[in-house]
Length: 230
View 1 (cartoon, rainbow, N blue to C red):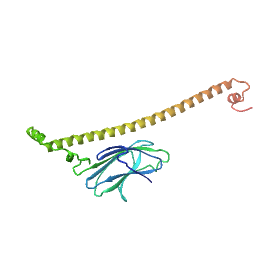
View 2: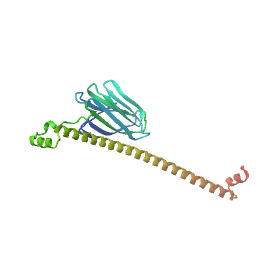
View 3: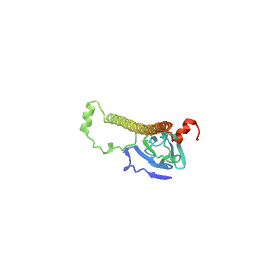
View 4: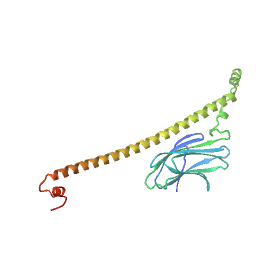
C-alpha cells in the first residue's frame, strides 16, 4: 500500500479548513492520503470525492482512523461522508483501485474541517487588528456594532466558501462528462471504422466472386456454376 502524505502548503488547493485535490490512482493500487486533525479546533470532518476519468468511473473508498474503518464505499462513482470527530490525529482517505488490472482512475476529492459552530476552520486574524476607538464610536452612531460587522462578514465568507465548493464540484462534473464523451467518441469511431472495413471487404469479395462466374478457366467459377469441383 502506497502512502502519500498531503503536503498542505505544496499540493492542491488549500483554503483554511478546505482542501481539494485531484489524484491519479494507478491500476491495481491502493493509495491513502493523510489529513491531520486537531480535536481542539476541529469538530466535524467531511470528505467528498468523485471519479472523473478512467474505466467505468468507479472506485472503492475508505475513511480510516488508526485501525478503524469509519466509512466505506464499494465501486462508487462519487460519494460524500461527514463524521463527528472525537479523536485527533491523522485520518486516512483511501482509494482502492486494486480490482482494476489495466485502467487507472483520476479522482477529485475535497476535505472539509469544521469547528463547533459549523464553520470552516480558518485562522482568526481579529486578534491582530488594531483597535480604533474613533471608528467604534462612528459605527455605534450608525447603529452597527463591531460584533455585528464580524458576524455579517463571516456569513459572507461562508457563503463564498459554499460558492467555491459548488464551482469545484461543477468542474469535477464537467471533467467527468468530458471524459465520458471522449470515451464514447473513441468507441463510436472504432466500431464505425471496423464496420466500414467489413463492408468494403464484403463488397470486394462479392465483386471477385461475380467476376469468377464469367471466367471459363476459373476453378472458383466452375464451383459456383456447378456446385462442385470437376
